[in-house]
Image 1 (cartoon, rainbow, N blue to C red):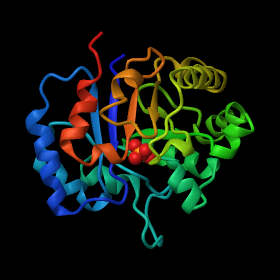
Image 2 (spheres, helix red, strand yellow):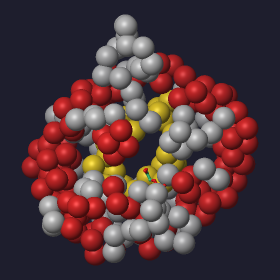
Image 3 (cartoon, rainbow, N blue to C red):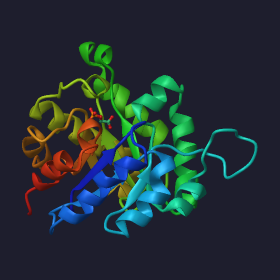
Length: 246
Ligand code: PGA
């Protein structure tokens, strides 16, 4: 399985930021991993033209509805039309600031697949939940509730993003990452059976050029979802280069 390094720009970037994508395009030698960049929705179409298919682009959220009176929402078909191939769903910032539930994330995933997008479905425990040693049950519940039947390695990747590691510079130890990824693998097999085979499980939360090598080369880690360090091509390229060919 090729690893996937995905960048999540969150609510960062205007037209001038397209230069970072062009720099990325020009420096992508034969990388040992797959790459995806998820800029804000307003930039997807321009990014699509700018990079001329050099790597796939994704959205950061989509509606579970196909069209209609949903002011401010963006459908999966709209993302696809703009040039996206994928969409991040159930990010902790969506869950936290927009009250998204597991059931809503699952509906969004079905809408994304129906529009021809692949999905990255995010799960992860909060600081308090980790302190209380509840991370396994929390993530089990999120996998069961947010990853619908029909998820396969071809249409879905999972991102394990402990909330306390996002944007904080803190990361779990390698052992904690390995344990959680193994746990998520067994949750996926329990709920999806054969469908879970080969599904990528990415790690996300404060991945940067200094820690990428040790995290990305763990056998249980099938890639990374990178926030802050994906905004500058130079940093993101270092993370991509940290993936060892195998
Ligand atoms: P971070 O964000 O790399 O800035 O911690 C990761 C994410 O939220 O996807």
